[in-house]
Amino acid sequence: MSVPYKVAVLVGSLRKKSFNRMLAYALAKLARPALSLEIVEIGALPFYNDDLEADAPAPWLEIRNRLASMDAILFVTPEYNRSVPAVLKNAVDVLSRPFGSSVLNGKPAAVVSASPGAMGGFGASHHLRQSLVCLGVNVMATPEVYVGNVTALFDDSGALNHAATTDFLKRFVSAFGAWIERLSAG
Image: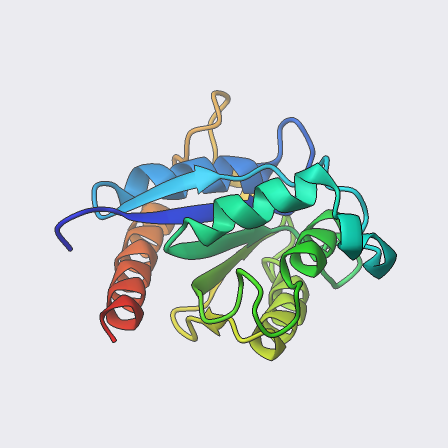
């Protein structure tokens, strides 16, 4: 990889001190220089309503244009009630239109989930993957990333301070870079 691939990062938590946002920042540091990860904010997107497509709201058009210019997408999500947070599902719905030719169609992607529980957001990850696959998103199958007990992995400044998790995430971002490169090549 000679130039960094541009990767949009969609974080499924709006909380100010979100562990998933901290995880996204940690992944961005670990991914350099091969990948340039940029968090794309989704909290202000109006709810998806097909009636609005004829005169789509400006935030919808802005996020669609921004993701069209990206090489790949990384979804970093917590688990809410064994599923995907509403804010992230809404972003997927907004980005999935127009159906069949959306900015998601054919895009390389990966899903990372994290939660305070031991299962690390397994349910949210699989629900999200199910939606993405039906939209033609090329979701990397392995390694799967479910970060459990996330509350114990960061220091007071929000930096990842767990060596085994750091090593695992380094392997993940390397695999993700190879996934993007393979799909971009052909």
